[in-house]
Length: 346
Image (tube, rainbow, N blue to C red; front, side, top):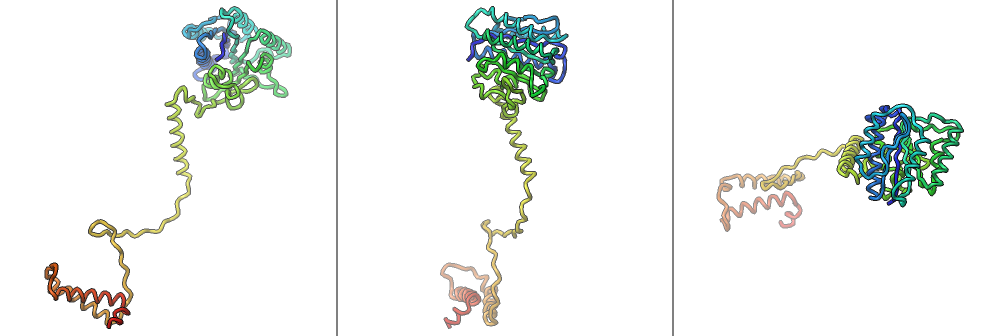
């Protein structure tokens, strides 16, 4: 994990009162500062973070080289009541570099993170050259630079896609240690986009080539929605990520069922009656028409079975009269089913 001393520069200009980020642009900035501080300190306990402003009455250092989040939150809260005027980016960065130079632990590498939420006041060629000179000075003194533009701070590219802020970061970059991140307003959180970008990829132990968001949030990219599914990092809130995933799967299944073609009409099945033991009863087919003699024998056998002898209780090893009736019934049925066999017996 990187061993760094970081100075965060806040934009406290009048533009930070805008409500394009909920609940306001400055509140989104305050949440992002908290995320940056927490990530830096958790990545290495030796790291330190400072905070300063760059608008209103002029650049002002609020906290230098601290590991206590309470000092950062207090400084950000006090800044929320001191919004006004315009930002002075070059002057603020020069003061931040001077504050980093006087860090106690000289083994800490230097980094400046600038939040720009207002448009550039001076876009003339002279102002751009001044920024490029400042960038080269940062590069010479081994000071890394991360510039996060959001809201009105997102500069519209000029001819051939030229951007002053992007060119400024590229001039300060040494071995790809500086990044430019542009985050347009949207339904996502500013802090979430920064957390998933290359700005904090090294502190989270993520290779920088894997960091960033769709659209390339790097030294020459622009930010967008979070790279995580549903915009939620599962490692930070696994329960919310699982709930969103289950809800999305249920919705996809419902839509698939609604859009599925109706099944083909099936043949109407005739319900079968059940026997005495609950098993489906076999539906007998009508026997083919028999000869007149066979009909007569069958009718005679049925008449005998319905006669007085039918009421006699059947016992094992019964009399000849009962056996004769059974033989007659069996013979009549056999003759009706297979008349040729009966003729051969005769």
